[in-house]
Amino acid sequence: MKINIKATGIELTPAIAGYVQKKISAIEKYLPAGAVDLVAQVEVGKSTQHHKSGEVFKAEVHLSGVGLDLYAVSEQTDLYAAIDLVKDDIVQNLLQLKGKHQTLSRKGAQLVKNMMKGLNFFKKRP
Image 1 (cartoon, rainbow, N blue to C red):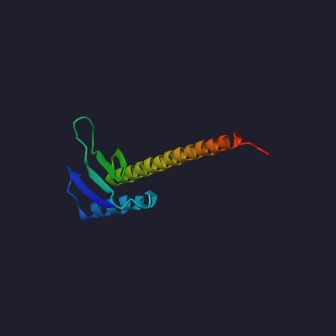
Image 2 (cartoon, one colour):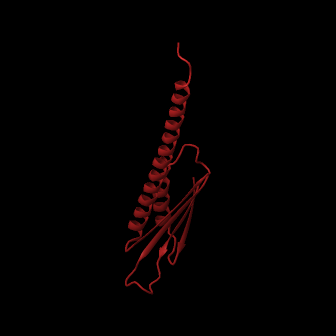
Image 3 (cartoon, one colour):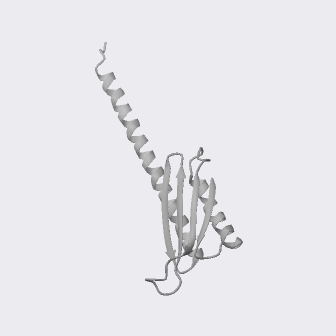
């Protein structure tokens, strides 16, 4: 998985880049086995100060590639907390998607099984 990091309104220090790299690369264990061409676009920075008081940091992740398109965003008063929450959101989205795919495949398998039972029903029995 390739990770692209962009900073908006703040300087991208090696500490921030390393933390983002560490947290986002941890989601690889939730990805399908053949998903090596995925790209994670990560944007960290300050939100606008117009409507909010104090510093508000934002972290966004857009995970795309090989039939996968997930997006998560988090705003917190601490940049590292925002990164942690956005990572948790992406993991939750991945697990939901995996559950959906498993449910659909199970429904398909049940349909095939019922069809096969129906075919055996119409055969002549001795």
